Image 1: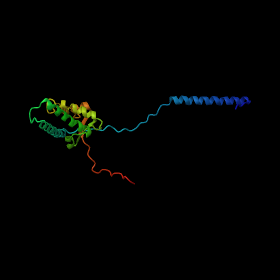
Image 2: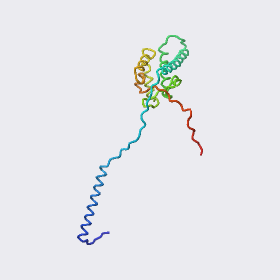
Image 3: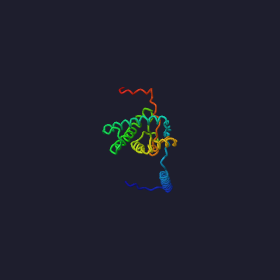
Image 4: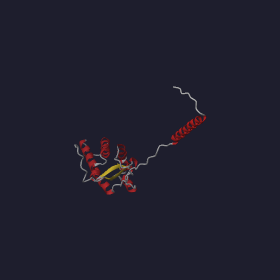
Length: 196
C-alpha cells in the first residue's frame, strides 16, 4: 500500500529531524558493538600441590625390598633355565634385564608404586601431583639401568643426594618424584543411600 499526502513545512522538518536522529543513534550503537570486547572472567584456580620428597632412608628400604624381589625372580629364572648358579650368559642376561624393567615399569605405571614402595608408603607422582603415567614410568625405568652404573645405584644415589627434590636421573628425565603416599582417612564419610 502506498500512502500519499501533503505535509506542512513544520511537520516535514520535524519528521526529517527525527529520521536523522534515529540514524545517528543506530550508527553509534553499531560502532559500540564493534568496539565491544569479550569480557574476561577471572576464576580461582587450585594452586599446584607442594610435593614433599620422600625421605632417603625410606627410599633405601624400599629399594632393598624391591631388589630382593627382583633377585628372587632372577634366581628362579636361572634355576628354571637349568644353569644353576653358573656364570651368566647372553641367553640369560636378556630375560633378566627384561624382568627387572617390567617389574618396576608395570607396578609404577598401574599402581604408582612397586611392592617395596607400597610397604614403605611411598608413591611415584608427576611434578604436578598426578599419578605416574605410562610414558613417565617407561622413561623413569628405562634410565634405571644408567642410574645403576657403575654398580648398586651409585650414579642414581649421587643424583638423589645432590638434587633438592631427591630425584635420580630417571626422575629428572621423566619429570617424576618419589613422595610419601597420602594417609587413608580412618573415618571416611558414609556411603550415599542407593534407594530413597
